[in-house]
Image 1 (cartoon, rainbow, N blue to C red):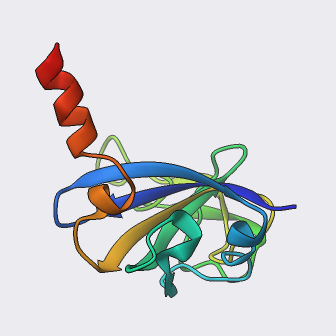
Image 2 (cartoon, helix red, strand yellow):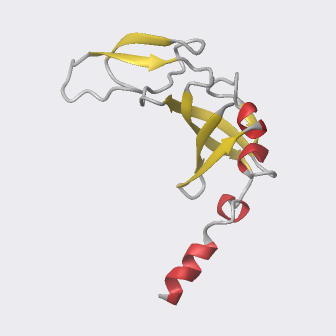
Image 3 (tube, rainbow, N blue to C red):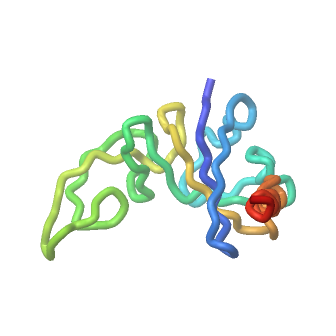
Length: 135
């Protein structure tokens, strides 16, 4: 059975939220590629549309949009997803995962494409502010 940690980014506020999904909600992500848009019902955002922006597997290998399928591939990278060079001209061979989501993916990064007030829809935001005021 698939189980994922989903990191939801709200581009309007710059906040991120984490949700763990399993069962039928997790199955909605299986077979999807980076860039696909789906309904937010799987993560508790029924009135929103989310787009898959990336992810990583259990060992931390990042998903790359330019690698097809679910396979692992070694790439010689000059920068981008999976490698940040520390000096000009530096390259490094890195193992990355393909753009399709399967059971080996542990974390999925998504961004809200349509819909407003993500924090309220997830039941967060104002409750944290109230707790801070009480202290």
